[in-house]
Amino acid sequence: MEMLQKICFVLLLTTLSSVYAGNCFEGKDIEGCRVKAEQGDSSAQYNLALMYSNGKGVPQDSKEAAKWYRKSAKQGDQHAQNKLGTMYRYGWGVSRDAEEAVKWFRQSAEQGDKHAQSNLGRMYRYGWGVSRDYKEAVKWYRLAAEQGLAKAQYNLGVMYAKGQGVLKDSVMAHMYWNMAAVSEHEDAIKGRGVVGKK
Image (cartoon, rainbow, N blue to C red; front, top):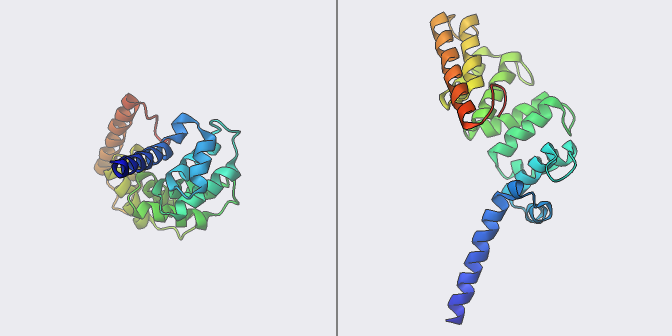
């Protein structure tokens, strides 16, 4: 019986620690989150990075945010990879480096992150960190658009309107713009913001 109690206790601790690391951002438990992050928990590393990035519970510190995003991203966290790509894209907490941004966006996009797919599409569309390639931009925008990301749908509409990477087609442009409006409306109802914001 004593052995069964010990097993149950260990299972309870394991469950609580994994749940705890996942929402230390909401709880603003900086020290608890930091302990988990330093132990290598990628969710805690991501959440700690969010805290530093947004100044939640700690002073805003882009360098510290980039440090923790990088640790989580190297473990394969697609959201951290996308955020780290954004940090490099704009030079927040790191030196501005479009090629490094593309590297992280690609890793995240290949895992299916719609925001990274849209970001990678934008990098190809404007030739930031890669050679300009409208067809590649359309490919990545389309993947994000299929997941309902309004800004990707809008940008895909622009690509059709201008004939960039696809045949110029005003019907398709309007279709994607309408999809973006619907997605935007649904996001607003759910409280997720406006085009261009995550």
